[in-house]
Image (cartoon, rainbow, N blue to C red):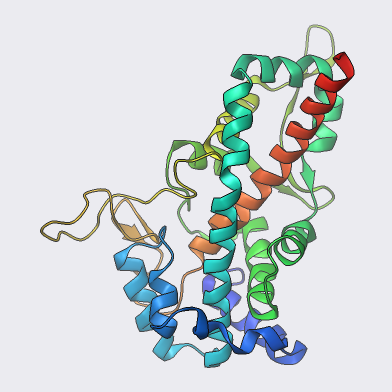
Length: 288
């Protein structure tokens, strides 16, 4: 199988989970939904009908033991629920702070050198946040470790872009991985006239727009419909489809990790946003 593909994630996570063992809380995920596994899949609002049905069908061929599978989906629901509850914090901040004022703060108060230091994130930080802040169990943790590695080498998968919505697409397009700095944004450009580093205005605008999108109205957007049903919402579609085509069009029926990659990138965007928000508030306190 190609390295960093979705099949690779399945095999890697299964090996690490079975050799590392599960935790006690992984044994009871279906108690949170009366419809069991199917109910957990359908509880994820950004996973539309086409993709949810594909995941339910793929479960029959999955090499994961049922307890691992159910634990993974319980955590997927739990993480989204907690992240949705946090959205208002970003909404309130961005309503209080003018976009241009925030950009000026990044240019002048922080500057290119400090911005470059802020926008570095070790790969391990993503799974640490999921574990410490969202209390994910061993099963989902092993999957997200593999997913984070998949994102770092995403170009090698030849998969189309994961994102939905303009802000998410733009953020995905500028997110890079460096073997020394981890996940990074190329925030600095060199002004040839003065041979000095300057904040990249295009990247700055994209990131400020990303910060605004963290406040909602949706945690993750849904794509256009790929299946015509009478009475269906025209904006609904398969979460794993892009312009009517999925990476699963090759005839394989295994699970897709697109929704997990989107959550991982959302964790990264929030990690950097939290730092900018904290430094902005500290600056305001200093002025007082």
